Length: 351
Image (cartoon, rainbow, N blue to C red; front, side, top):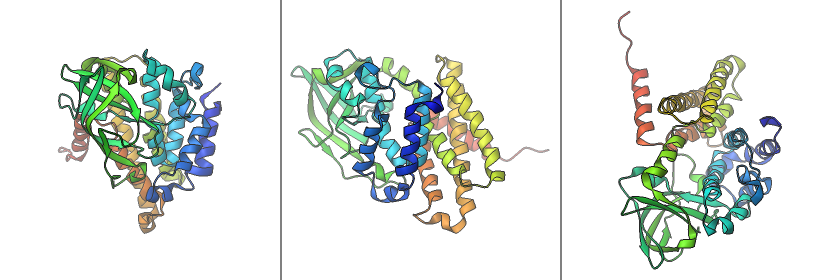
């Protein structure tokens, strides 16, 4: 079976065509509705990479990437809420704790939706969320700067760092509870619809059987660094959506570039990581981001003044592109991208 023939790809296309794309501008202004999440649940897409033995699809990486492209291109806010779910599923699939048996099946089948609260780990050695052993479990204190899907998620995968430099990932219900308080939803330039908040943790206690991952920070960071240098499928999805309404003379050169970058990025993503490949993957991440920026700008230019209407697709895609420029960003990727931008802007030398 080819990627395009996979049932989940067909379901993603139907969702995009019949529900997500027609309502994308409204969702952008009003927020991701629970009905969108219910449609995602029913589609089976929440279990795209989950083990078949737990009710998931165990689909190849190429299928997961293509469905992400389709959803992001249709409604990036809805894609962003549901994409949080796949890290908890993958974490549980590798876990040996009792929490695996309690949650992996419901998450794989879409009966529960999970969010994530761990991006702050990338600021280490700063520790925005501190974890201490207490009463046979773990106490979480500090601030989670970003948490997406508040009010839509059932559970969350929360992470912090111990004084000894170990990361602890544990599940809890995604609701107000003793030791956990959420801010009001943030007003953002893009993806305000994703219901993103910050979380204040003041003595949130979780039992040992809620823990899905516990290991030294540097051991965890090796895997995380590999993920953050990859080009996001959402970037390719937004680029495709931006090119669709353009005339062929404008779109074709950009589409050719898209196919080249995407092919190289995905081929590298499927190979074992080496230092050389990490540099190549980061370079392709930046090229993909710059192509997305060009494509969405072209959409605004082609649409003229009407592009600035909040009911217009071009302005929404351009703002979503701004979001994706920094989503999953690290100090390494930020510095490398800035170097490219400065180099491109530098005046040419004498002929």
